[in-house]
Length: 95
Image (cartoon, rainbow, N blue to C red; front, side):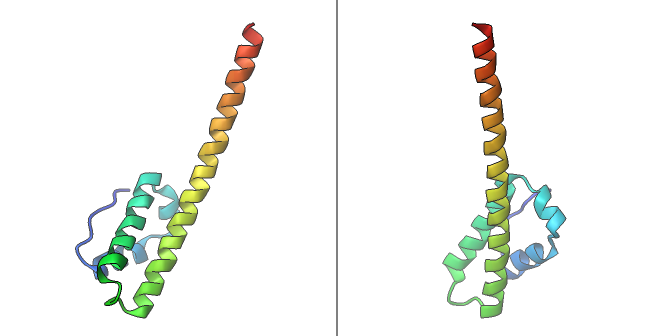
């Protein structure tokens, strides 16, 4: 799944609204963070002009993406720890 540049708040909102939970889970970490950055940029650039309902929807989707990223990082960290443990065992057994 490829992320894209969004030229308007409506374009970003429509894209985010179209994402299913399954599609979010298929995003690579960098793609999810790009979407969070896009949301953040719109808040920075148009914060006072964004309708409160739109702002809440964007905030909610941003939090969903951040939670996904946090889960992904936890999985990667656990996998790294498993690899480190195997490597230490290999070193221990090779001596």
